Amino acid sequence: MHYHGLVSLLLDRILEKIAHANGAIERGDVAARGNAISDAIRIVDNLRAGLNKAQGGDVAANLQGLYDYIEKRLVEANAKADLAALTEVASLIAEIKSGWDGISEVVNNGNASRNN
Image 1 (cartoon, rainbow, N blue to C red):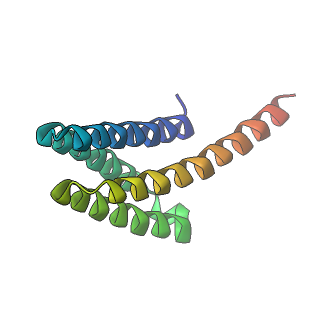
Image 2 (spheres, one colour):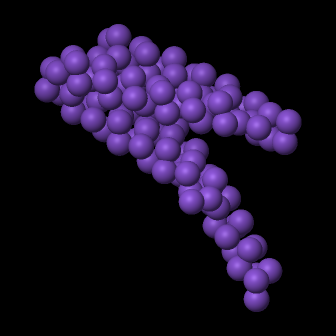
């Protein structure tokens, strides 16, 4: 799997974990909420660790700041069983994923053009 595909997969996994946390909050399952949010935070940490600040410049710096904010909101969501915070994070992740998938399409189309 290419790097673009891996990042897209990780972003999908965050959205899945947020959905699990939402369900856990609605059921009042504190342990499941904590596990799902902890998993989401761990994935965000991995995405942040994978940022290439030397090549990524402002984009990487902005993503780092956004990942920091997302992590803060996830911690708050866990502490307060805050569905609004989870909804906000899901929206931010979906926005990142949409942009990321767009980049992947451009890269794949560029590679296909070069191979023809």
